[in-house]
Structure formats: structure tokens, C-alpha cells
Length: 346
Image (cartoon, rainbow, N blue to C red; front, side, top):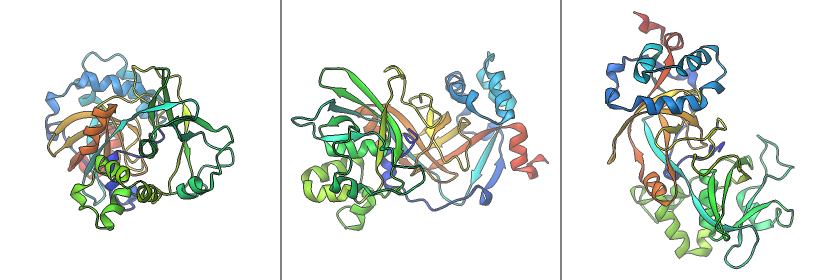
């Protein structure tokens, strides 16, 4: 991912967030007693996930805490002794969405129903530089015949949503499994096809989900293809053979992420690798300590998070239904916390 990184949940197809800056944000240091459900969480599980990526954090204070974390016998005590919860606000309401790792059906060679390619990044693309749009790539066939194909998939909608997720598994015709991860993009901004369906008056905002989009495209193949091309962003992939099937896909920190313990955040506000307490509302409330280990082009703002629900269709259904309010609170090293909110020193 970087995204995996890319995209954030399928539900993030609908997310509408404006530009934000950490310079304009407010910071409030809370007590752990202010975190709803804190005492009931499995802090040991959260600590294991934190240890997956904390060594990759560059700041000296974070590195010191990572070294301490390796020898902890009581995870809850560790977090309470060395961190302070910081509520970061940028004026936007909290929005939780979900994402997952899709599992697609594919082949190493083109043939039969396998007609839709996943491409490696062509060498002429430079990071940060705009290239051809999704429509231009698909209409011109500029990538055809260059040996960039990783695999051929049986469904163009699955390919599109894999671009949104940025990572996935492909079950090949011989029964083996191929994992792919984000390798780059065409430098075009993400545009929501869910919002486009609403703009056209086809659905109301509350009606749109990944399943609804998928069904509409399949019922309207020609118009559906043009709808998918409404999103000019196009993602390129790489094979990820180093990650065993038992582990999650790679996140923005190039480490495997963990089901229901990893979230994607906006690193403008939340450091990658930081523990984050979430209080998600909605039909399936969630109170737990997560770790910020991923990012996403649709994940922008201080109170914006994408929850990783795991791999496969069941995870996809849960992710696609997630679009909930609440709040998230970042656990910061003590000195960093009070440097961000010095008025709280009392």
C-alpha cells in the first residue's frame, strides 16, 4: 500500500473532506480516564501491533519508547506511563470508514474470461508528476504489449476496486496465491464514483455502497465503464512475495498490517506508527487501541481514519458498511504531547 496506502476504504468512495493543515489544528491533552472503554481493551494485542512498526519511527523520543516497549510485562501500564492522549481537531467532524484486502480471481496469462490486466509501473512515470488519466490509459492501450502485466483478472470492477484498495490477493488458475501491493500511480487525484452516481441522481447518498456501485456497473456495462473512468487516478502494482499468507498486506510503513488493529490516517496530523485510541459510533461501535500504520488518498484530516477489516469478501462487506462518527485520540510521548498543547501543563 502506499496506499494500500492509496485509498482508503471502499466506503471512502463517498468521503468528502476539505484541505487541512496541522498548523491550523488544535491540540488538547486528555487523561486516560477520558477514553471511553480504555480499561476493557486488550492492550497486549495493541502492543504487539505497535512493536511491528515502532522501530521505523525516526524521532528520538519515539525510538526510546520503542526500545522500552520490547521488555514490557504490562502493556496497559506501559501506555499509561509513557504516553498522553492528545485530541487533535481541525474543524472537520470525525469520519471512520473501512478498507480491506480484496481476493480476486486471475491468471498469469490472458485468455478466456481473464481479460483485465494489473500493470507494473512503467519506467517513464515519475512520482509527483501527472501522467495520462485512467480513461486515456484504457482508451489508448498505451501499456499494451510492453510486458508490464502482472496478471489478468476476470472482472473489471474487481480491478477498479483493487486500485482503490491498493493491495490484494489473486487466486490463480493453478490454485496458487499471488499477492500484489501498491507500486505507484499516475499522479492524478482520486475522484469518487459514488459521489458521481449521487450527482447524476441515480442514487441518494445513503444508498451508495461498494456493492451498489458494483451491481450498477455490471447491469450497465458500457455506461458503467465510463463511470469508472470518472476517477482519473490509476494505480500500478508490484508482486509482494515476501509476505506470507498468514500475515496482512503491507501498509505505508512497508510492514504487514493487522486486522482491526491497524488504521490508515492522515500523516499531516498523526505520526505513522503512533498508537491511536478510536471511539467509533454507528451500528457496530468500536472502542480499541489501534496503530497508525497506513495512509490513503481519501484519508485527509485530523479526525479521519480508515479501519483495516482484513482479507476477503466478508471483510469487504464489513468495510463497505463502515461510515460512522466518533472520535480518535493519538497517544503521544509525554514531552511531545505537552509541546503540542503547552497550555495543558497547568
